[in-house]
Length: 450
Ligand SMILES: Nc1ncnc2c1ncn2[C@@H]1O[C@H](COP(=O)(O)OP(=O)(O)O)[C@@H](O)[C@H]1O
Ligand SMILES: N[C@@H](CC(=O)OP(=O)(O)O)C(=O)O
Image (cartoon, rainbow, N blue to C red; front, side):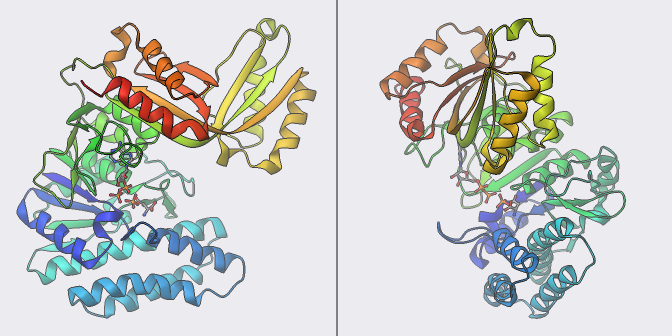
């Protein structure tokens, strides 16, 4: 049995859904289908999830929201009209939106319920469409499927008991269409995964049903060794390990969600990234082990939107518990961090800018100065992280030199270097303005002429 997940770009229009139906029909093993909400049809289009977030914001701010509802319905109407599906589907979507509006959930839960309408409606629509083509297909709500998650609005995590519930789908003979991106708490509250989280649902379902393969359909032929919007025609990656893919996804390979790797990895389900426009292409396989290639670096990932909090204090190295107390202040302020490179008398904490809004700056700096008696505290925003990743890196000499030469060639100053203890990745912090030039120089150093 295969679990096939179709991303937002694969379900963005009627034409795309025709391709999706063709892919499902072409292989009788594709029996569990997970879908996203309709994504962008062209580069400055708006994803249905973002339309729903706009709708939620208008509602929460007490503004008129009829226009926002119409925009969502129009996206689905374009699809139902072209596929010749009954108008009843649109009435039901409108009804679902109204029931979120009139529910007595508090705003945080309402936001998740609004967001989930995109995937939920598309799953219902696709099951009706597949039936209209003569396929034995049915919609399955994540609650009935048994996708039980933690109580964390907007960033839910799967609970282990879900996997046993999902195994019941293993023996079903029909095609089951499950909306991605959300599950339910034990108390029955709807919670979404982080943005891009339909990949996570696909992985959870694949692990639960013990699928032979988790196919993740998107809009590119494969995972490339570098973001294709930065380097033209980069090299395709034919296979990589879960660990490599997790590191790369974390640092900017938006093609697959980093949190989607663990469920598949734990259940040893191979993952294949494929193109909905080219389903017969080989795609990229993500597996536990692979043959090592002569080039130990498999990919270069990069992401913007980080900041560095720098704290220095003479004799910090002798002060028991300094790091813990610094991180405690951040925890207290509800700020999560990513990395903590440190020196003898100083420590930096790297975090996403979204975690540390400007309003908190003054208070946090004051607290660190007063509570930790720090000599200096400063914040450097506008940082980008660039990572080179590969399982073979730990046994290769000279990679750091090659990488730093590439940064020098791009005339980019290194703000921070960090090599994780697993030695699967090497990370560099730079100013955002140098990101594209650095990535191109690193690509040239590690992949050109290989
Ligand atoms: N290294 C990479 N390899 C392939 N695609 C990448 C990479 N880095 C970023 N991307 C982007 O990821 C996009 C696919 O992810 P996404 O838009 O989330 O797909 P979906 O709509 O199928 O969920 C591609 O169109 C590509 O621009
Ligand atoms: N629709 C959700 C979840 C998702 O996975 O979408 P996509 O497949 O378009 O990345 C989002 O936009 O976050």
